[in-house]
Length: 293
Image (cartoon, rainbow, N blue to C red; front, top):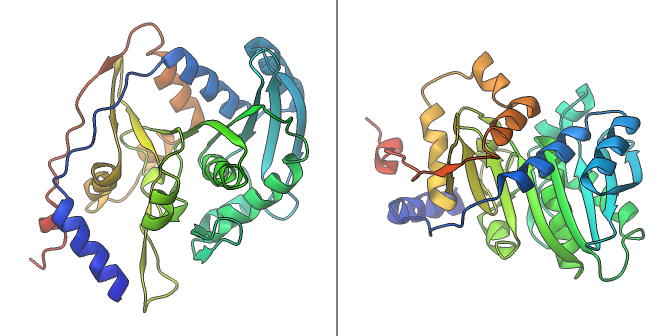
């Protein structure tokens, strides 16, 4: 419990720290990533058609045997970019992967990682690293479980000195702890979320080792998609505090529908022609969260 107690105290001390100002985002580019993440749920002919439409060539697709995680790799030869898209939860086996939330030391990165997400990421990394062309930039994307695997894949690539150009995920759950988050904060990461999607707020901590609890922590900027043209950008503690809004309510059908990739596509596409960045506001008081009253 000692590590967990110190972590909570640290959060309380810096809870009011404001998050650094973030740049505007190109929603036409984000729409392309959203389409490529959505394509991972489709059959190969539709994936190929979308890749052709967006200027990519579909090079490879496969499903990991044990975790049943589907992924594909496409290449933009003009800009010398490899794109890897990973499918989200789509089978009972995938649900078991989601539930395997123990944080364990990852051999490649040396950081504590979500065990269920790290295992398929390792398989995909070993399979694709021999297919990447020297000097090509690599982008990863995915929705839900796929976003988590895409995130860890980018960490592996960065550790092995590949050129990780960009990571864009949708409705992605957490994959590592505070230390792991800090280790990869230099990467160009954007986590796209919707306000009522609870999946990006999970898991809160590793409950397996009750003697030494460890807090999960997100990596990168968080872009919150509101209805219409509005969006906010946050990260770090303000992003973590969003979970407090769900402490007193049980997730329902609305939360489920707001996690669907189709809903993310709709929210991104409605901002392509006009978008308005608004300040992120969260009135949650962290001191009250941990109060005994």
